[in-house]
Image (cartoon, rainbow, N blue to C red; front, side, top):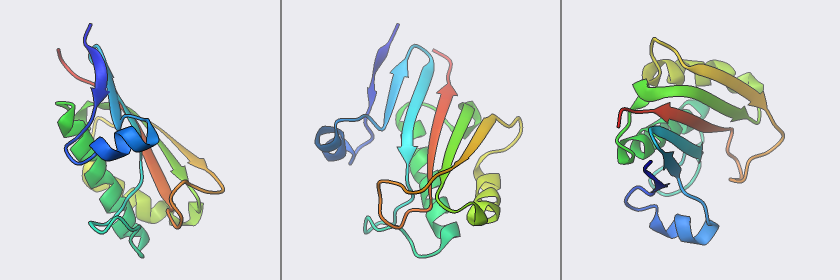
Length: 129
C-alpha cells in the first residue's frame, strides 16, 4: 500500500514549520488537512465569498498534487466561525462540488487558527490506484 504525505510545491516550509502534511495518502485514500482561504499575499480576503473561493482553489491544488480532483471527494467537513456566511459558502461550494455530492458536515465553531478566517475545509478523497 502506498502511504505518505502530499506536499504541493510551495508548501514545503509550512510542512516543516507546523509539522503537518497538507494531505496524506494511504492506499487509494487522500486525507486533506483543513484549508483556509488566503489571497496571494497570504492574508485572509476581506469578503467572505472571496475567502471561500480561495479556500476551494487551494483545496483543488492539494487534490491535484495528490493526483486527485474535486469529483474524487467522498467526505467534506467544513468549520464555520459565523454560520451567517453559510449562504455565501454554499454559493461558492456549488461551483466546485457537483453531483454526485459527497457526504458533508458543517460545524459551527468559535475561532480558527488564522485570525479573521471565517471557514476551514477538510476533505477525504478516494482515487484509483
